Image 1 (cartoon, rainbow, N blue to C red):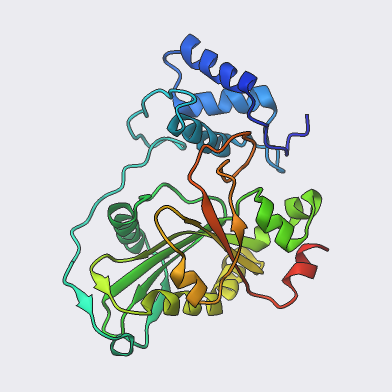
Image 2: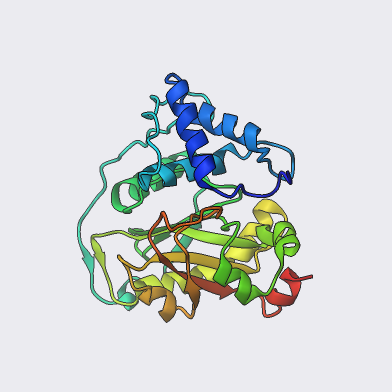
Length: 287
């Protein structure tokens, strides 16, 4: 088996997962994901088990009621366990008015421990998905008004491994994608705080981010990003701010999860938006 491939989730594999859970009642989610990766030979390019991706897949199957996962274990200091987010008390004084009254906005990378705690608190309390974890290479931003009020939080992480409409739009093949995927990043969270109601703010923030994220990425990881992606859940949102900021809708997901491998839709359908940061991104990604 090619260890870089995501396993195709068939009925037989779902039955295997069910059997492992039933026969090992004391096995936690982390142990289960490691065991499955070993069985399927699911490893990354560096040879390490893809247990985090496997755990994402298991949660998606559990949400779709294909399996019943054991309850998460209490948080500990060990890697891979459930992380408890500290919820801070935030100033929720309404911020309204015109965008010009808040400008110039200040976009800051979240780097200090204190800011990271604050960032996680905002995302976990106010974003409908909460804060899960960082996925691979990542960049977190907090956005402030000219007088220092927090307005928004954004998180960028690893791009989805497989996405039919995105991959067709880029025009790359599996081998090109495997070697160039790190030149994409996924806007996994975008939160304008719920007590901030200012027209055109969200699209303005997106425009500011696109002007600096590639340089920020190169400074942190030693390489730029050429293309941004995001996935907008169509049952909840219309993607207006992304379209206003000139992101390109290239299609919709199949509902099979960020790592693919499922026959049937198990997740909400999402619109796919891309934003090129380099005029020659297609040729560079398809080299």
